[in-house]
Image (cartoon, rainbow, N blue to C red; front, side):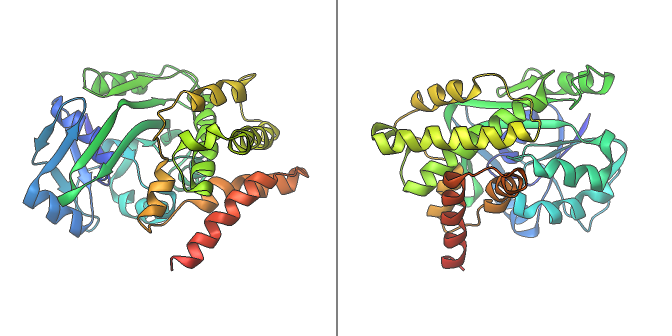
Amino acid sequence: MRILVVGAGAVGGYFGGRLIENGEDVTFLVRERRAHQLREHGLQIESVHGDFKCQPKTLKAEEKADPFDAVILSTKAYHLKGAIDSLEPFVGEDTMILPLLNGMSHVDVLVEAFGEEKVLGGLCFVESTLGEAGKVIQTSPIHDLVFGERNGERTTRITKLEEAFSGTKANFRLSDTIEQEMWHKYLFITTLSGVTSLYRSPIGPIRETDEGADRIKAVLSQAATVMRNLEAPLADHIEDALYDKIRGMGYTMKSSLQRDMEKNLSVEADHLYGYLLEAAEGQGVKAPDLRLIYGNLKIYEIASQ
């Protein structure tokens, strides 16, 4: 199976590299700067699960190539339109598109661009970042990529994709309930990213204070209410389960959104929080904690320009 990974950053570089390590035919769609980095230094992974280095195949948007069997899309939401424009020439009639973005609004954008049948459901949990010379540094035991047909069917194509993903050092898992899992992650990320970016703190000190613990619960409750009104298939009592998960996380755990703010990078304020607040307004639902987090991120965007 020919697999195109859009971008070779902390997420795409890690999972794409693990697939190459396992013998899969992987190409990275990259910009010139990253292509130069990869030519000069190779794709380097430094991980608690084992290091790996290779000289990967790369492709730039202006180059030509036959359509790929599968595309793994791991860009940030603010790069989504550019990514769609870049990968269009490499998407054929039978290409599967597997997005790993947080949130949910990107699914509609991809369906509009490529058609309902091409877009799979997907998500990932991995703590990774880019270090010196573009090295992918992966630092925690969790390195999961979950995928599936959005309607839950076990199709021939998804079975073939599962075969291509099997046997790697990362955890690739086929899910029959991927849409629910995507909403659950959205709720989790909304809360973790929201409170850590709001307080500029790892999760440990936040949950140790009454105010911080109450804020975590409030964000979970408000976001879940909006999502259920959108007919998201959230499990009963998922708020309690995710609160327990957050309480069990490492004391020094930071969200990727918080790390982006520390590096003065762009953030996904509208994709994650603006989407929910627009829905809340249409529902007549008050979500003051979500609005506080959104306001914090929008002020950061203005201040960091």
